[in-house]
Image 1: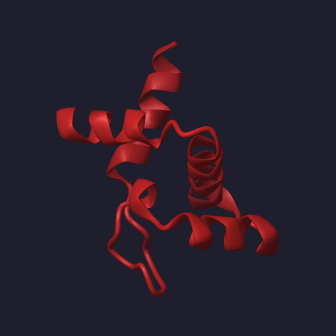
Image 2 (image 1 turned 45 degrees about the horizontal axis):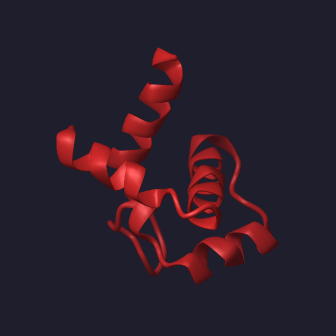
Image 3 (image 1 turned 180 degrees about the vertical axis):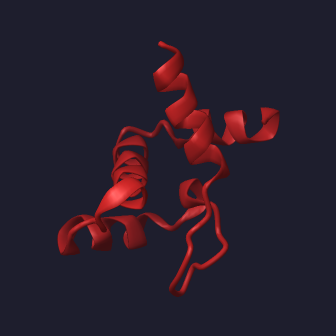
Length: 73
């Protein structure tokens, strides 16, 4: 359980490291940008896994969970 919580805490702190949205929190990236990555292919590594998680959260309308975590940590 702690590992799942830590994944969400880490996601709440992660900012886009490059590109048009450099410096923006991943959870706050526009949906069309995340969908573009979904179609293009997520990058490898931790960033790709986090972007894929953002996609799933946005798809299910759950991104506010991460925004609440961001406020707390």
